[in-house]
Length: 199
Image 1 (spheres, helix red, strand yellow):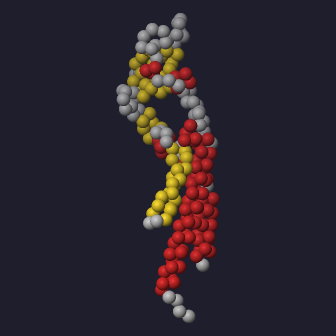
Image 2 (cartoon, helix red, strand yellow; image 1 turned 180 degrees about the vertical axis):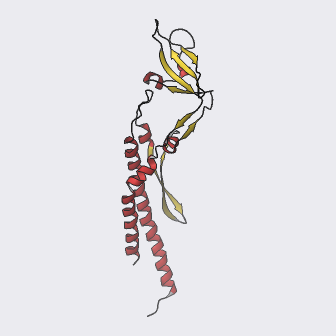
Image 3 (cartoon, helix red, strand yellow; image 1 turned 60 degrees about the vertical axis):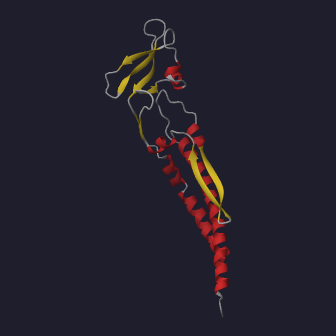
């Protein structure tokens, strides 16, 4: 029995081509599963009891699977990533400190009516204007109060913080753990299919 090196080379080329096709398919399938898992994990997180927090579901909905097919050496290969376009998605996941960028302090809303508008959107004077009250706390600049008609009708709208610490939620790690078994099955099946196709 004689094996020609030319035939062996062609066989190796065929293995590479078939393995790339199977791996691409597995990669895209895995990204779809991860996207779904991230969304489900975020929606299952404990709900914040902070009075200014409005639960819109925007963070969960913002994650999407960005599939692309690019041409490398004359062949298409898949690239994919599950990402969010929201600027606060990363810090919600890994945690960290938020510092003011354009003002002296961060305005933390203390109720739902404050959460849907910026302090600068209130009138500067007269009815509906915010009143600033200085704070004695080291981490707090002060508070902004909306004064109503009559005594005792004031409403706390914002607390002005020098910085805010966001605790990490680790929803991407939790999402990966939830689907680790399915991921192993997907890529395990892919290798079996690749071997079967090559032999």
